[in-house]
Amino acid sequence: MDWIEISSQNRRSMTRFPKFGRILLIAGALCVSVCWVGCSSEKGEPAPTVSVQAAAVEKTTIQRVVNSQAVLFPLQQAAIVPKISAPVQKFLVKRGSPVREGELLAVLENRDLSAAAQDTRGALDQAQASYETTTAASLPEEIQKAEADEQQAKQALDAQEKIFESRQQLFEQGALPRKELDQSRVDITQARNQYAIAKKHLDALMAIGKPAELKAAAGSLESAKGKYQGAEAQLSYSEIRSPINGVITDRPLYPGEMAAAGSPLLTVMDISSVIAKAHIPEQDAAALRVGDKGTMTVPGIDKPIDGRVTIVSPALDPSSTTVEVWFEAKNPKHELKPGTSVQVSITAQTVKDALVVPVNSVLTAPDGSTTVMLAGSDGLAHQQAVKLGIRNGDDVQVVDGVKEGDKVVSTGAYGLPDKTKIKIEAAEASGEEGKPSAEGSKAPSEGSGEK
Image (cartoon, rainbow, N blue to C red; front, side):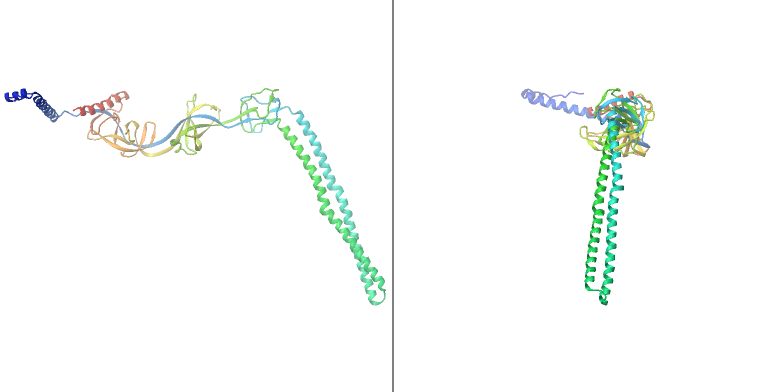
């Protein structure tokens, strides 16, 4: 660069005004520098080429899979508690024994209960006999006598009415004195009174006597039956039976020890199927439905186990703000143990013919918008806004923004400016090589900013 020559007159001016001269000198130097930089830019340098990897947009089936840790529980469980306190006479099962519903598992000491049941049985037999005697003997005799008295009074009344009619005819013919007719009228009145009394007595027995006697006898019989059934129930409490099909998982006592009422004596679990109870975030649980299928991965078992969702809780757990989901799986060989921690994978949604790209190709901005870098046919990377759908592992569905066959930058897209010249490497390039490419994509951007 040539130096600026200063005339002698200017030198004298600078000598006379030294500060003003320095300002002019610095301003001139800056102008020369700016012009030199502009000339350098106008000459132009070749744009950097960034090495990237690309993947084609594919149309395939994608599934939304919800993964979660879970704990196994039995299908059913019963902690059997005796209703009475008594020593254990004997156990018929041990821990691990398979049992059926209604099967006898243990017997408690019950000699006193057996004696009480026998005593009430005798009282019941006595009440039954008394009821039969009352209904079949005493009441019918009284009723039969009342019915006979009523019939006799009726016959006497009928006879007196005929005599009165006959005497009245004779009286009208003048063949009978009036005194005889009046006497016949008195006799018929007495017969009517006798009949009314007999009929009233019979009605009283039928309406009051018989039901009262029968109710008393029936009450005694029912009372005896109730006492006998109560004694039998107490006796049955000494026999411990299984309420479900399953396996004995706990038996804390030995024969001879005291079984306390209200304390578990035996525990039965039905592990023909197991339930994995998982607590899933609300957003994922909203996509699950009863009947959704999935798999369960269990430590120590190589092959995943198939199952399905049986319950999606309608309420959130207030302590964790998650939703409890039950995932049921068959367990015919009893390989799955309650209490085991497992991993469940549930297929919540399946989309066919979906446009799918690698997750690594999607860039997320601070405002939440998503984009991909399309590898254009012009050798440049073009930023394209996209709308995403469901995600499955390393793949994600693109709902809008790309079409089948487009190529997206899968490795090296981070920090890559729009319309950067790119070079697509072979797909076999390792992930370690992709990292420098991503870093290299930042370098040209920084360099272009410095120029």
